Amino acid sequence: QFHMIKYEDLTSVKSLGQGSFTRIFKGCKTDIRDGEKHLTEVLLKELDVAHKNCWESFFEAASLMSQISHKHLLHVYGISVHGVKNIMVQEFVKYGALDLYLKRGRSVSVSWKLDVAKQLASALNFLEEKNIVHGNICAKNLLLAREGDPSQGSSPFVKLSDPGISVAMLGKDVILDRIPWVAPEVLEFPDNLTLECDKWSFGATVWEIFNNGNAPLRGWVLERKRRFYESFQQLPPSQWTELADLISQCMDYQAAFRPSCRSIIRQLNSLITSDYVILHATEPVTQ
Ligand SMILES: N#Cc1ccc(Nc2nc(N)cc(-n3cnc(CCO)c3)n2)cc1
Image (cartoon, rainbow, N blue to C red; front, side, top):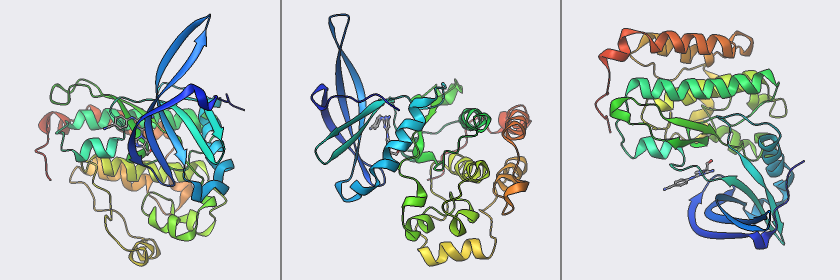
C-alpha cells in the first residue's frame, strides 16, 4: 500500500538521535523525474534491528500516513527495505519534535500554544472523520514545520508524525511507561485502540505544550505510574481553569465521556478569544 524506495536512491547525511525502537537520520532521496535528477531532503526513520519482528507494525504506521493526506499530517514518501534494514522515508520537517523545541526554552506565547493545540485537534478531527486511530499522540510526535514568531504570536505550523510501532505489539512495560499519554483502558485491552484513546492522549499533549515541553509525571517509576491510574488521579491542573477543564474532559477515565473533536475545537476557539490570552501574551519562561 505504499511506495517502495530503492536503498541506493537514499543517502543519510547525519544521525539525529532516536525515537522509540528507531533511529532517525537526516538524509537525501534522489529520484529521476522527466529525465531530470531531483534531490529531496528527507528524514530516514530506521527500525532497530532488535525490533525487526515489529516491521509489519512499523510499516503499517507508514502506510496509515501515506494513505491519507492532510496539511497537519506528516507526509511519508515510502519505505525502503535493504537486508536487515527497514527504513521509513518521511518529509524532513524543519524544526523537529515539538517537545525538544519547547524544552530548548523558546518562550512562546499562550496564543502560539493554543494555535498548536488547535492544529493537532484539526488533525485528530480529520482522523476521527475517517475512523482512523493514531495511537501515539504526544508532543514528541508533533513536528514543527514553521516557528512563527513566538513573541509576535505569528502562527507556528505543526504536523502529526506517524504513530510508530503499535502499543499492542510492545510489552506491558512500554505501555506503563507511556502513562499518562496512553488511555487507562489500553492497559487492560492493548489490542483495542479506539478514537477515544486519542482524545485522552490529546489532553496529555496539551498539558505538555502548556508546560513548556516538560513531560508529565517525568521520572516516575513504572509502579508509581501504574498507581496513578489505579487511583484515578489527574495531572496537576493549569491555573487557567478553562484550559484545565478541557484537559480533564479529555482525560476522563470513562472513555465515552471524553468530548468529540468538534467540541474540543469549539472549546479551543473560546479559549483563543478569552482575555487570559491577552493578559498572558508571553509567559515568563519557567525552567
Ligand atoms: N535539530 C534538529 C532537527 C531534528 C529533526 C528535524 N526534522 C524531523 N523531521 C521528521 N519528519 C521527523 C523528525 N523527528 C524528530 N524526532 C522524531 C522521533 C519522534 O517522532 C522524529 N524530525 C529537524 C531538525
